[in-house]
Image 1: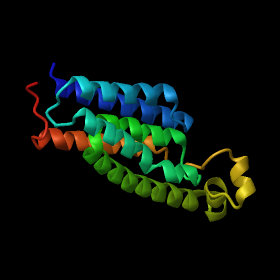
Image 2 (image 1 turned 180 degrees about the vertical axis):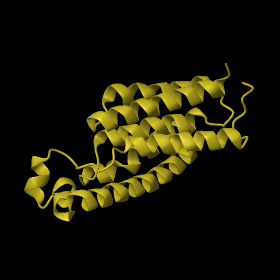
Image 3 (image 1 turned 90 degrees about the horizontal axis):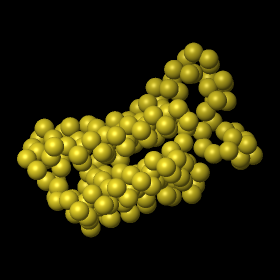
Length: 178
């Protein structure tokens, strides 16, 4: 089996597990993110991949992934698991592919949230939907213990990453002869 298939398999496995856990429990635990980040860094330190991702790219991807969601987390707009999810994914994908996957993830999240909120408003009413998804004040936000998530972020991250990998594979950017 070539390194490209190992790379793709590891990225798909990590994002699938993160999406399942985030969907089910609305959190992404360290036991998923930390080993994934370490494995991504080790993989690129030890293997030369056809995409040209070096250990420097892996470290840069890790740092960029961490920084992308750090400010939203500090402002209460996401969980720390999301921050670590992107950092670990950056260690695997490098900065260029991570930024593409992140941009597509944001678009997918916005569309999914809009659909979810529209559906909730049309089925249970606007007031009930507002009560479920929007905190009215700071004390209610504290009582909810973290951000209200309309869409668990790991799901669109996984989907966008898979689309990106398929696109890279079929566009010839990944050489499978390794």
